[in-house]
Length: 195
Image (cartoon, rainbow, N blue to C red; front, side, top):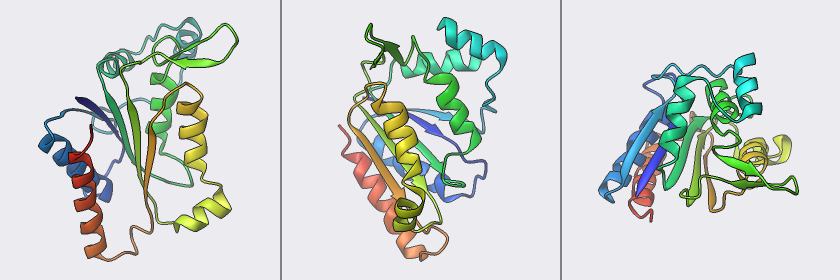
């Protein structure tokens, strides 16, 4: 199975980087091929230019990096996103990836009735792994699970992708090092079992 990981965190010493290492280790133990799209290292430009918007309308991307990312998604069986939640949503590079790469004619298509359907039919599941320093119940009650609404419902449900899972790690700066180690161990074991 080929898994594409879309990763966004600029600091190599971040907990997200540790998560990436654990998830990758689990996938490799299970014999999966891992394709990492590290948006920060790739210096991905998240800005939707006028040319990008014309390309969106014409369903033909023009940014060479976007074209490369999209071709890599076409061979993926599972898609994993790893990023921190900043100010209740994803960082700019991740938002730009959604805007510029999850593209009509590539990731989804419009049906005659105006609804959307997935076009990357090989993708059997999507997993979102996020970190934040906000307590989970506060994020749900006061901020309405913004990332779930934006990505799971606003993007992937709407475009027809099933088998969506969200792993939210909360209060990362406040928890003990032991709890962080347990999270990492649990993630590695979880992805060893991905089928």
